[in-house]
Structures are given as structure tokens and as C-alpha cells.
Image (cartoon, rainbow, N blue to C red; front, side):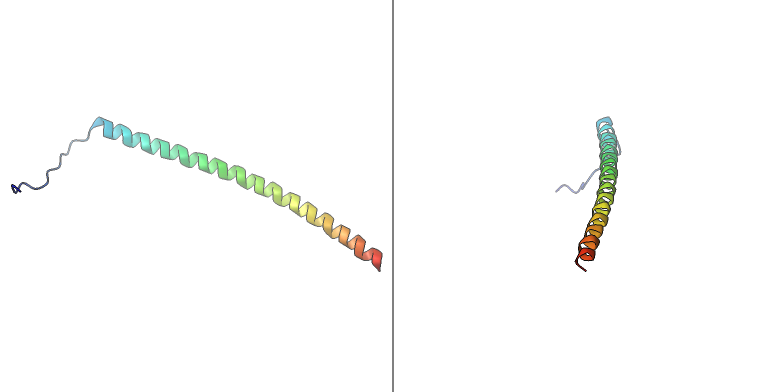
Length: 71
């Protein structure tokens, strides 16, 4: 070694800035897409839960009829 050690340049290149901005934009687009997909899935889950509640009510009524008919 010649004793100079590490040298850092304080210059920031334009391609580095552009690629960093591009990565940030892509990351935001990705997160936004995920949030939209989660909202759709939540809506589908709520719809499925409502249908299951309806089925549960129908099954309860059917059991009441079957049990009531045997007595």
C-alpha cells in the first residue's frame, strides 16, 4: 500500500440519480398495485362471508324444521 487509503468523490452522476428516482417510482407503483389488490380481496372476502351467513341461516332453519318434525 502506498498510504493513500480510500478516496471518495463528492460528485453524483446523472445516471445514478435517474436510476434512483426510477427505482422509487417503480416501488411506489408496486405498493399501490398491492394495495389495490388487497382492497379487491377484502371486498371478495366480505361477499363470501355474507353468503356463508346466508347459508348458515338456511341450514339453521332446515335443522329447526327437521328437529321440529321429529318431535
